[in-house]
Length: 105
Picture 1 (cartoon, rainbow, N blue to C red):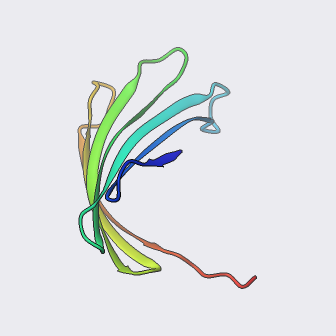
Picture 2: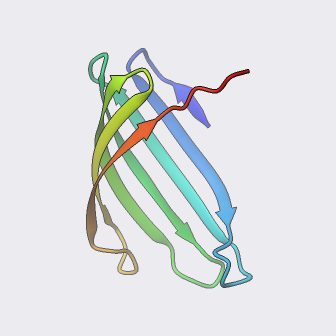
């Protein structure tokens, strides 16, 4: 779900569950994200997220990043984050891109 808090700030959150294909027990996932519009093309976000299973410990994590809109259909991003629990990985850095394909109706 997502809510617009102001012209430049949005709040997103998600609750769900998934199955990894190896175990019958589901994994519960959650996210809480705040997005910021810094300029017409530059955005940023911070996110608290994680997952847990019924019999295991909670794995909380935190990340943030920047996005740059090259065109209406192409965006690049860079992000970095870290785990907040012993079970989490230590930290990460990532770069990526998103492209929106137009379909014919």
